[in-house]
Image (cartoon, rainbow, N blue to C red):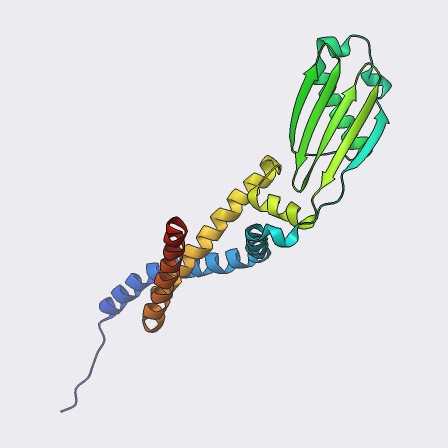
Length: 221
């Protein structure tokens, strides 16, 4: 007797409907993993390399000799009474003038004003260097000392967000978030791989254990 095998359309539809959400989530995770990896490719290389240079700063010690610049204060800043009534505004105008005319720039600026001596000191810090401005308002003279610690020091400071300004600090935060997405999506994609899952998880445990042992060794040592 011939038997005719038939499929239950409703059961097939149920299986398909159950697999669709999982398939969509996997595609989304794979898309996130791929695009974050490409977007972060050079950025991750930057933070990886500068992580090494930060850990071995003595390998890259190279600093130019400090340079000095002597200029005359512009007439617009020698207006009678300006420094007595609004010294901070005048100091800020002087800094902007030095930036536009002589390339003296930085992201962290502090002012020290001696009212009696009418003497101003501006401390300007930037990644990889600094400038110190000494302005004698009575004489109308400005002396600038500039120090540059080199390319590697600049990159190290950028890695730490040191003297780099709010925009760069925000960039670091976004980069860290994208690295987190890249890492978690990679972990998500590993879970369904039954054949490789144990080995990959073992590598993760080894990496975590190595970090923990290094930290314990540091504390004990």
